[in-house]
Image 1 (cartoon, one colour):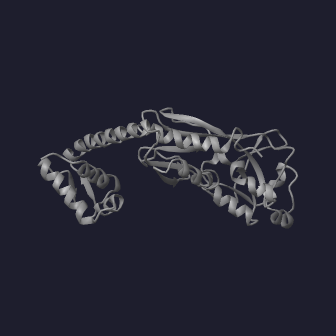
Image 2 (cartoon, rainbow, N blue to C red; image 1 turned 180 degrees about the horizontal axis):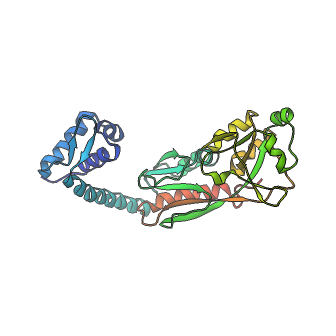
Length: 300
């Protein structure tokens, strides 16, 4: 009896999610049906693919070997379907997108509706991570990264660049005063990043001409958290234009050191693996983002 795609999908889902329960949820099946499918596959192969303990599932040596073939088969089927869809100029299937929370909220989410109207057969899965994720480990198809790229194995498509500015709320400045030079920052509450520390290099020079590096009074891994604290009047912050444009236009956040701020811009790229079989899905999504943002997407 031949192995079916449903059995391969169930096996891969159990491995990827770590449990039959989670796999059943992902596949929209009952737990018992998923368990039976996995058992049926092992019977056909006449081998044990997974060792079941009270706490976890572990691949056997045979299971690890078969997993590679299973992934290749499913990828080939996906690619075949992708090619057929491309012939109809209608990309289909799931696209997993990753971006830092601020970029996801302020740039991508507002453009999702337009994308869904253009490409209703693409199923978007949007994930937010504050650090750089491993695309394979996190099963991510395309990620938007802010700052210099280090992974040369990834294909990168430039989206634009976004200037960083030093900001504070009018309420904070009314209570604590407006600093006029870099030295006066020591008298203020500083909202900064706990990782990476390079994000605490602010676009301002001190009296010696050295770029200012701040030590946060309150630190966070999330730029959105820092933005919310700045809006609440908790201190001075340095953030990228893409997430503060409306705050600056409305006056909720006020730029400081306007005449002395250095023009420092963070590059923004869409990244994915060169050998991906999801090219049309990725291309249509990134194209939509670029087209919607325009030629100078993060300018005033």
